[in-house]
Length: 211
Image (tube, rainbow, N blue to C red; front, side, top):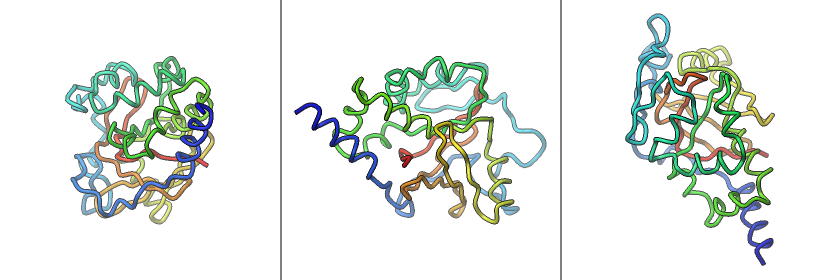
């Protein structure tokens, strides 16, 4: 019975499609909004401010700390941290990188079909959990300004190759950066440019799903 429940949970995750973001409430945080020039605001003059401390989940994200050491302090990312630990990716994300991480919130995980997260955290589901998590990681440090340039250079869309080997498509929807996954689901960047010692985090409001 447990195997059937686990299989059903994984199947639901892989077949789920994140809802259209046009109805999502709330505004994007500074760093993900567009200026009149078509580039994300707050990142246009000179080099990005990689030394600034951003508040995420009620805690300061220090640019001198690595991705894991910062993420464990965010009350909005406890599910993500638990998943990273279950997948055995802690040491990887504490490595030199650099990494660009699109970090789903607890609410994003909660929006998945019931039982999916619990199923993925089971030892037997580790390969699938690893695939899902590494689908949210892109090698290199890609801040909002760099991503905006890629979108403009690609005539409105940029294709990102993830650490899992899959692809994400980045576009703009009004002032917001939106990522489209392999299932056609969309995630909006709600907080951009959370700099880390080994990369950058962009908080997203949906879990991105690979093929």
